[in-house]
Length: 245
Image (cartoon, rainbow, N blue to C red; front, side):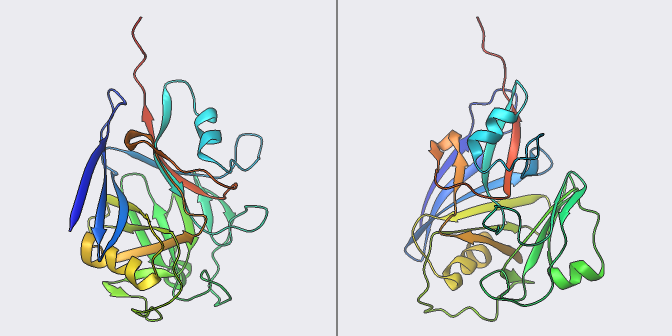
């Protein structure tokens, strides 16, 4: 196994977020661990005028002076207008309700799930369980399918599945304090991607965000993926020390 570790440094006075590239079963994955006791993790969809950001660069431009994105990625499936397919809550305001019905595509491949952020903690909850007893989420995004459910891989995944894509997703450790943002650096199938979360990162709950459009922004390691506009985005916001004169 090959591991290349980098710290997202360069933002004076802020905690460092650890990103690393790990080769797992002959495929490289980039994973960034966000410690919610130190790092501010948020969801982003619309600017103050109600327009969807669509890119990491537009979020950067909208942040106040002295603040910027530390690490970010796309955070859930979206329609052609880039509105969220499933539940979306940002700063306590719900834009889209939770969807519990099975349907076409990866989102409807039940069980799917919800990432719920409450400030200092996070959890991934199966969507029907979430609908029955909704936790108090400051931010939440629904996507699917679940990758890992209570330590088990999604029952529809097969080891030799032929559908391979660049994929991204999220896992949460059992303490609820560490959030793993992961993107595959080469096309992989669902089974391979899910096993990375379970067998390499050791998380018992993980959620798929998307494929093909998957993107990572991590300037501390020189990465800023670009492409067509996207919908929901998850990212850390960090303070930048003023430059000296």
